[in-house]
Length: 197
Length: 343
Image 1 (cartoon, helix red, strand yellow):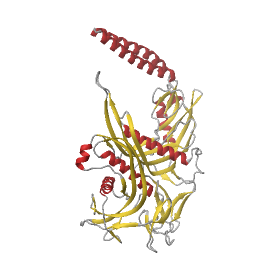
Image 2 (spheres, one colour):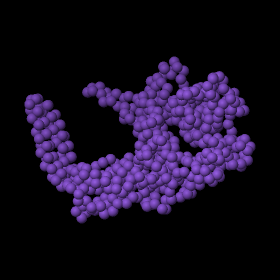
Image 3 (cartoon, chains in turn green, orange):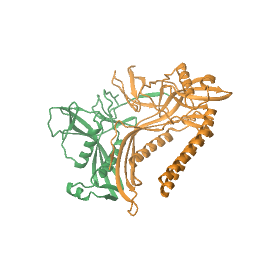
Image 4 (cartoon, one colour):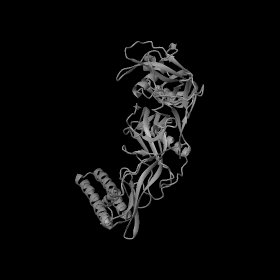
């Protein structure tokens, strides 16, 4: 058996890629375009950077998220109890077309990532994009697209299980329509992360 | 370094010649000297890792003789056993590390008292844990080895699999991956099921972290006792006994038979005696039933020691004999980062 180290090249201009971080999003020093590393090769990728709407003194980082656009079709569901709580709190089941936000940076601790993923997916935030990573660093992206899709489906099930009432039966289709990469601003202190939107 | 993340071989950067380190499961590799970026592939499509043999022959033999003294083995076995050969060997294992996530919904049934109906309690659970699957990738014959657990201090080394003593891989990469990922998903659902008697909905996901073919070292010690051949397999890193065969103790067998019969009769008699002492017919019947069950348990235990006690089987050995020790588990849970919810 031999191990082969295959040099990665820019998906736009074919120049050899350089990086100091193990980042799936690789920026070409030659032409400036970004390539996505997946399945052993690079391919072109489009991404957007979100403008911070909250100002903090802490260091600003742009955290990569996979945004998985899906159509959730529930054919049958049975829940025991919790109807009044759901009505009072206004919590509705996830149905129809929706963006699922999946934090794609290993650097963000799981306890933050799982809360952000759920809150962003529920609230479907509106935001303004900016052309560059202004006043902040770009966080390393470690998650691939397929993992993000499965995580999105698990978030849907997590939501259905976490809202009031006990889920008993569920029959659904989870149709992924598209995926994209989005960098969201976050402020980092020694032991804390806070989203900047 | 955690059990699920191991630094593996150092490689040479094809661009600048600097040393490049890569961890298990990583396919994106960087050179810290020239910042070049590489995709790591293998010509067989699978990452192979070999762990260094840490245990010397002397240490292996010392632990082997200690093992001969343990349990109901033949009298003076450690003095009379003759080692016929002792050699190290590397065995291949498929190793799959990943996160299992599952959503499970169902009903727990609590039996009602007398006229009350059974209570049906709905439950839902979310499981989010890391699992480590390992399975032997070759036919180990009679060695009784099923899986591995890599110790914290194990050191991975660069190697050429044609230069080491090993068994050929008999299970395909794809079959191993499918089996491993399906086992992890089944386990995630089983962990979520917990007290549920009926499962009405379940869905599991597997998120791969690393998949590799691991060559793990062992010491094989073959020995004879009273003209019969036996063996023991020791872990080549921890020197623990993994599996083995040893002659049983005839004296222990006869003692088990005699003590088992006597003790079971005495227990049954004691239960009957207490039953009569209480006086009530119902108490006599209940204590008699308990006495019978206890006596049957003692007889069963004693019979097993008597019937199969002529040979001791350690670990995951198959065949007739008195089984001892822990069988290696193919699936382990890493509880460090667990995010479960049970309602």
